[in-house]
Image: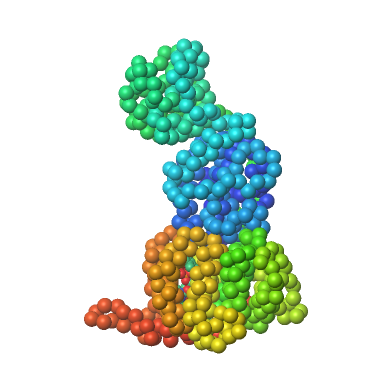
Length: 527
Ligand code: FAD
């Protein structure tokens, strides 16, 4: 089927940027920009997409002052670009000023709140704080006018309408209406604060926000019968006789590459859901090592320690094909031998990418989801493979308890879980997922006393996540979030006690040990 991306150029009211178009678009732009760097495989990005789309639609009329864009960091062609912008988590929202002369990585939107209204207000704050001289020319003054200046407006015959939104200090309505009317001619919109009470009284303004109108012929008065809302003010002003939308030349976007719209034809790969596919595990490792970690310029301190431990447990426990295991072992030995406390990630990439096929050290560069295929390209994929990878590692640790001897990580039943916890904390692109996972870990990871309990702990927590995400927008309709393993793949795992469902944990453990064992791995679709 032709694949549909999370955002579609020409269809959504925003600009879909790509590796090729992002720099020219942001550089020396006459409008400021707010860009969401997302990853098509991140559940939160999927869940957030309707908000972002709605925001873009809501501020479409502001685009000559500030534009809304997206860039998909989960798309292979954009990996390098997202690295240049230093994107580590998805979604990351960045502001870019107008008329930047050089490459910049923009300003992060720091807020935790991703409500449409908050985001819209942040856009206004950004425009208002924009350096005056570089301000987008289309952006009118957003600061309030003083009542002394208003008097002169009233006295003037100006041939156009002037609307004044009176409002309180904390209100954004005035600025929203100003921006809503950016593209309209024969009207100027200003805002004033409700500080000079006697003056307001004289004008008949008794409540805020309210909209006051000066006609082209100089007569003026309060507009009554309007609900004190942005939408009422804006649509009233837009419909005044003589107020028209300026004919704008369509904003020129540099060489629109239609790459992301190119209809990748993805052929559905049939698979058996009771089996584990090496293609998923290797693709996950590929993405982890070459994409997710590669957003870090260098590793040091706790991040370096986490990476080293991850490589060690993977080298010892990953039930992979020879070339991949060899690569992990080489990487591990190299990391151990390095006396550095800071390693540039490029050095690691060099090693991972080194074409050592001939010497039998190799990790395929390809993303090939099989059991982790989504019915749409933005669904499942990497996060599915990361779960599978860590389940596999907990199970392998339980099956081969001696594997970690002499690594310094032996004799710790929680070791795989701890490495996973740190990995998720430091590197997983989905920050909110990491927070949830950290909460669960804090609560009960300490109680794990054996390698077997570690297998069951991860199983149980994964089911907690499944149950939390059931019905969520990130859920693939073809792969509903269910309590796993389902009765069809493990009948013995399920029991009823007095009519209530209950897990037979001994059976679940046995099932997990077999499901995530080497014997259950299929190599179909690997290179
Ligand atoms: P996944 O949940 O990814 O499962 C992959 C496969 O693992 C399944 O197909 C099945 O074969 C097997 N499996 C399923 N359940 C279990 C189990 N209990 N034990 C063992 N194996 C199992 N997304 C969000 O939107 N919000 C979050 O907070 C969030 N937190 C996450 C935390 C972590 C640590 C990770 C790795 C991912 C998180 N995600 C979150 C992503 C989400 O859990 C899924 O990975 C994603 O939605 C893809 O779902 P999926 O259908 O491929 O199944």
